[in-house]
Length: 352
Image 1 (cartoon, rainbow, N blue to C red):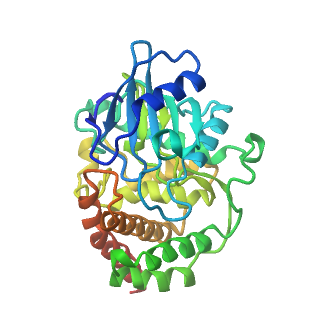
Image 2 (cartoon, rainbow, N blue to C red; image 1 turned 90 degrees about the vertical axis):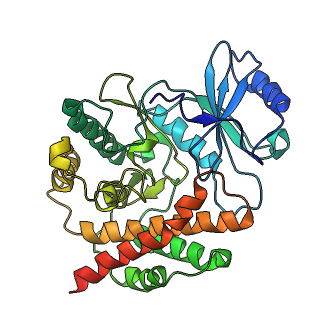
């Protein structure tokens, strides 16, 4: 599908003063000429995202959701910072036209960026793609995440974008705290077990790079006709961290069923579909980043399943509070218990 697809009328509770937005864009976005026709993208469980169509140009607006928010969540300002920094080293991200931190304009902070014209694949099996092109598309994904992890974050002004060192320990504390404090979403026995087990079993060694935090196929825009990534989207969870945490979150898809995880590949006949196996995909990343192997990949994937389950738990909490931003949020929240069970099953199988 194209990047212009997947929009609907603005959902209930997500509307705003469109005239106020037009006035802001006229002042802050070069060459803007309204009026704009505004629709809302169907995706986006966290930060509502809108398509702004004008006679001259298409834009994307991304904002914090309305309602009560957890501290530090929905950080659109951080997204803008990293998008601008990565653009300086010609990494494939959309150009940002402006950030508005004034809640009085449309009700919450927002930013406006370029609308990239290309292909977004919601089906990780690439069923609508020619058989011969599937492996090249996966290789293009692999090349981009490897390139991200090799960027010198200090040289592009991101030396303070996160805390270097002890990434897994800090992340386990962060997501455990978010899970435990969101009492409105309830408790899960497998998440409780993971909260206790993970901090005691962190592998040795430490590295620091830029990490995307949600790198997966449906957060990428590909060239309209070629297996080349032209845009990496959704940087809300980006920070400085361990590159293998980022890569293993991406490869977690190999162990996740497609009915509960966008991009899940578990149970599919990858060889018949011309999609690389987990082993070959990991080997390609290792070649690109100068590694011999990733011996603790199982732990990293278990950690990321825990983190993903904690995110889904947060969506469940937002549903309870009435601030969930996606029509599909309830289905996401319902998958939380399955993901938590799958994460603990991998841990338990490794104990035998």
